[in-house]
Length: 190
Ligand SMILES: CC(C)(COP(=O)(O)OP(=O)(O)OC[C@H]1O[C@@H](n2cnc3c(N)ncnc32)[C@H](O)[C@@H]1OP(=O)(O)O)[C@@H](O)C(=O)NCCC(=O)NCCS
Image (cartoon, rainbow, N blue to C red; front, side):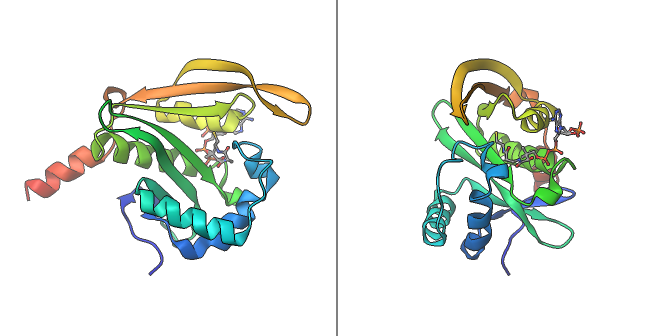
């Protein structure tokens, strides 16, 4: 079996990363339509580099493959970075690499599952993210999850001769409900 239901939603689940997906990730990370929204459109990724990167990401423990519940198809990746367990803060990142699945709520559901994991299993208190100001789809998705705008770094991203602002958003544990608390109580009281 390639994927495992670590955190389950209605249409997607978060699974540990499968290193055998390296070719699919390499395809996505060389696709400018995807990477123009991420911090690495200038990078070139080889299959060998991606195998190594996936190995490292899966060893870190806070990174997940986003899998379609319907047919166990890989849709993308999400994870937590810069986790500080003393101050209980972290940063999230996400991409849906399969573009056929954009704009249908999959990213929002996957991010909510990641927040549920971060707030209720890692016990984090504040999660932040960064997005480019032109990435309206991502910003809308994050707002739907409950993220609030906390700042803006001006002209922090230069691409094709244009300068774009970087947006900063965050969300507190108290602002997020999630499904894990009820699920855990149900299991404990069984
Ligand atoms: C960003 C991303 C994770 C969002 O996932 P998704 O499944 O496409 O997003 P969702 O469908 O859950 O939500 C997107 C929302 O933005 C809206 N939207 C799309 N394009 C928009 C635009 N140009 N302006 C305003 N809203 C827009 C959608 O209609 C949807 O809102 P709705 O549900 O109210 O209709 C995904 O598109 C992706 O991976 N993109 C490429 C990489 C990337 O940008 N990663 C994030 C880097 S910060």
